[in-house]
Amino acid sequence: MKMIYDLIVIGAGPAGIASAYEAHKNGLKHVLLIEKAGENCQTFRTYYKDGKRVDKVYNKIDIPNIGNIPFEDGTKETSLELFNKFCDSGFEMMFSNEVEKIKQNDDILIVHTSKGEFKTKNAVISIGRMGKPNKPSYKLPSKLSKVINFNANDAKENEKILVVGGGNSAAEYAVDLSVKANVTLCYRKSTFTRLNDINLDNVYKAKMTLKMGIDIVEVNEVDNKPEVTYTNGEKEIFDRIIYGIGGSTPVDFLTNCGVEIDDKGVPTFDTNMQSNVKNIFVAGDIASKNGTSIISALNNAKTIADFITKA
Ligand SMILES: Cc1cc2nc3c(=O)[nH]c(=O)nc-3n(C[C@H](O)[C@H](O)[C@H](O)COP(=O)(O)OP(=O)(O)OC[C@H]3O[C@@H](n4cnc5c(N)ncnc54)[C@H](O)[C@@H]3O)c2cc1C
Image (cartoon, rainbow, N blue to C red):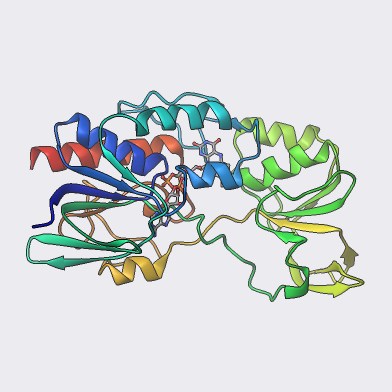
């Protein structure tokens, strides 16, 4: 008979790596971490630019680390090094395998993946929210998909770039690009309320145009470039637009697993991060409305591991 795992963790970001590590450290023998990409930490690799500062206090979340992964302020590279190290600590890992759903069968959970089915007593869903970046409500011209982006990886020197958003990721994209490009940062609210102190300071010091308290109503194509129409009727043409407006909960995935979501699209869970489906837990960004922070993800993982191993 195929082995029944003690725990299968879905998604190898900070929450998933920490869930597998903490549970294994607490004595669970058969732990499997499944990642859909060929490498771990896809949010870091896709959305953090090389050399990015990674802050321990993020999204105004300033809480102690209750877990055993010693995450501190650093860079994209030091953070990846840390999480790579903890992937190599005794539990089983499987890459390039996308989990489709989890189904309950009596007391056992069946994890359906692109590489077949796996049985487990417990599962942690830690797939983040960035697999599906948020898109604006207006339609974007499909012809311009190369210059309308959801991260800053393709931006080029001297381009006229519009960064849209008022959170830390939009601020970081705008500040970094302002050194080499002509940047405008557009935020629909008149003040930044979600930026940490460093990003707030950097935004005001950087050489960029701030368009605050103004939104975008449409984007059209003019001579192969995006033309933006603002709520005040003004129009402006850019070489590139970068949206840094977060990611949405993978509602379909959760629904397919039978996990309830509230009216904000967030899964419901108890103090042990257990969803309405017994033995299915949620950790990290997926367990929040606007995304959380690495420390919250690590703390969710420790809470779950402690609960599973004493149950
Ligand atoms: C631009 C930017 C800057 C940020 N800067 C900071 C910072 O300085 N400090 C900080 O604390 N936080 C920061 N954050 C937030 C931080 O990155 C997240 O809070 C953290 O990555 C959440 O971890 P997670 O494990 O929940 O999800 P993720 O890191 O998103 O990991 C989810 C993993 O699950 C995998 N996956 C998805 N679907 C499936 C599936 N069906 N099957 C298998 N695998 C799947 C993905 O490929 C991915 O590897 C930043 C975020 C962004 C976007």
